Image (tube, rainbow, N blue to C red; front, side, top):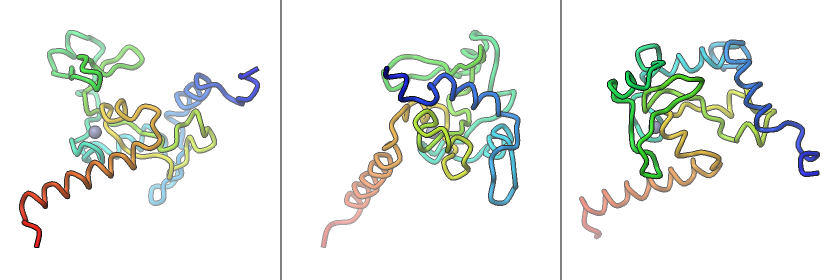
Length: 159
Ligand SMILES: [Zn+2]
C-alpha cells in the first residue's frame, strides 16, 4: 500500500539520473543546455563549497583496482570512523572527487532532478556526509559562522 503513494521509487529515479549523464538536459544560465557529465567537468579544480578542498575530476583520480586506489591514497576515514574508498559502478575514486549534489533529494523531488538551481558542486566526501539531510546547507553555514565567531573572539577582545 505504501508503494502506491510513490510515483517513482528511489531506484527508478537513480536509473533515470544515470541514463541521462551524457544528455544535454541541464539548462545552464551561460552555457546553454549541457549534460551532467559536462557540468561536472566544468567544476574540476574548484574548491568544494563545504570543505574547501580542491575537487578532483578525470581519469587520474579514478581507477578500477582497489590496490591501485590504496596506492594513490584514495582511502580516508568517514564520518563513522571507518576507513573507506569512494566507489561506484566498480570504480574507485579520489576522496574529493567532484559530484553533483541535489539540494533537494532527487528521490523526494524527481521533477527537480535536472534543474540547474537544484544542483550544486560538492566533493564526494562531503556528499557522503550530507546523505539525505536536506538541512545540510543550513547546518554547515551555522558551523561556519560559529567557527568564524570563535576565531574573531579569540583574536579581538570584547569592548
Ligand atoms: Zn568537500
